[in-house]
Amino acid sequence: MTTLTTAPLGPLLDRLFEEADAASTQIDSAVADLSDQERARLMRSKTDYRDLYGRLKDAPLAVSRETGALLYMLARGSRARAIVEFGTSFGISTLHLAAALRDNGGGRLITSEFEPSKVARARDHLTAGGLIDLVEIRQGDALQTLSADLPDTVDLLLLDGAKGLYPEILSLVESRLRPGAFIVADNADYSPDYLARVRSPANGYLSTPFGEDVELSMRIG
Image (cartoon, rainbow, N blue to C red; front, side, top):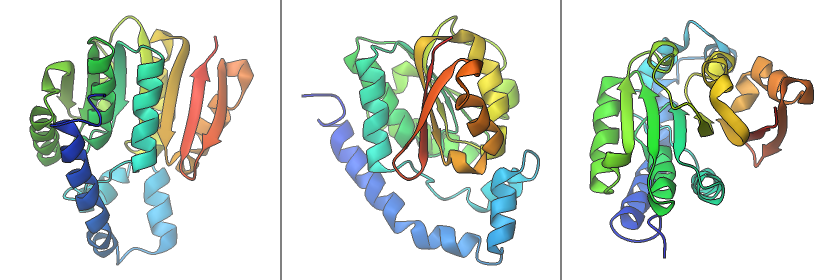
């Protein structure tokens, strides 16, 4: 048995995923006035993404069940003790990562979210799941919140915030990634600069697409 599949976390995740599935129409409505081209531009932008995410401040923007399971398995299998996450949202991915830390015997998860209402929801979910003691939620712009006071060694990095900032967030954490550390980037197709960087072994990474919307990378240098 694992923390991930037993009470209180297992039933909580089932409910949160059901709510996330039901929120798909809410997300569609929030961006209905934007053309496909404008949505893609906002997803890729390094400056205008706040408009898009402001529209979606009440939406879960959750990882898939498959990606959640992947996060748990990577963190658990690598015996992770220090994890950094960019983009908390309602905390579904955070719950998976923190569950792995619990089952690894403890550790520290630092996550960043700029929307205050989402920070509050994530904190409530982590408390309900019995994992809040393992997680530090930093509210604000991740370019600032993740620029200092990180663990000396990071075992896993999850990128799931504004896609255009993936290269910048990676740069903040890169020197702390241990050899063999995993980097999981959700919807990385919206960050071609990031993909070019991690797909080049010369930059110290091995990388491959995973599923439909994830880029899985490993630090080798």
